[in-house]
Length: 163
Image 1 (cartoon, rainbow, N blue to C red):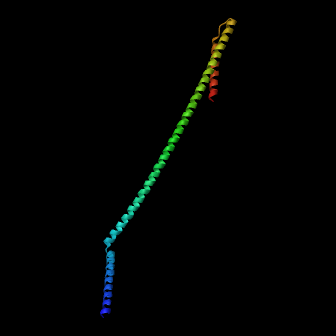
Image 2: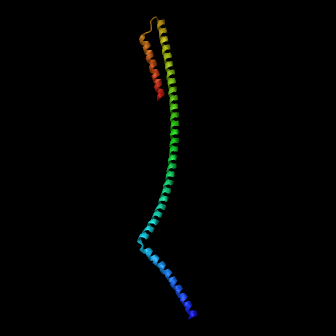
């Protein structure tokens, strides 16, 4: 049994060694399962890692949305500024047109008033000349009537222009 027995003994020793190693690993696995504190610690570490990752993703999303919001705000500000400038320009243009039209109407009214005054003065001179030719003075009521007539004519002309 020296040749055969030694080989069996060696094989048996090798199998015992392997069994011990497997048994040690099994015991370690069982100990890890039984060690609740270590399992909770490991689970907490995994949870912390996931939370950090999710927080990082949330921060990145928020930064992206803040950038988009800033961009939209800048665009809105630019558009509002542009619309304001356009409104200011249009208001200035309308104001200039109104001023020009008012000046034109005022000049026309002044011209028509001047014309009416000249006509009234001419009629008054004519009335004085006729009165002098007839040998009597100008009646005061005639001068007042001519002035009133000239005023009415001017008012009608000015009102007609405003309509």
